[in-house]
Image (tube, rainbow, N blue to C red; front, top):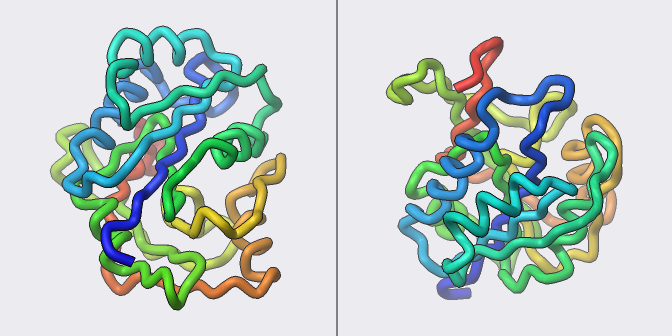
Length: 208
């Protein structure tokens, strides 16, 4: 398929919770702007506000006039709930679904790399290595090798077709569980030869 559309899903709760990143409002804006700077243009971002009024306020202030950025509001869910991403599935119209955490960043070529490596005629899902930022200048990175196992693969390292009829469950490790659901359903997947430009911004104890 030439020029497939990518729907990027972002769950957003910007208030404090155990293990939350610092300065979440600024990082949310940073994450959305990284989506806007993508070299690949056939895209949409679906932000799901997890009962978070701050998410709504920031969206209305900075992004409401962007036709490629949509907002869904749902009631506050429990920690590690899959309902935010399930809600986004209902309105996503891309051929490919990808993900972005509200405190991470997409390098400018991230979506293009996925499109170039994802043969939609042969595979239902792809996964890929990502990058972990090592300092606040964002000039040093650790290339994280991702494998389809617990504590390795996550939302930062998977993309899949939109029409796979799968849903996210609730609980810690739900990203790994989601992938195992896809694999056990017999869906075809592969690892991209080229690592992605997804930048994880919480390396060890750092939180950039």
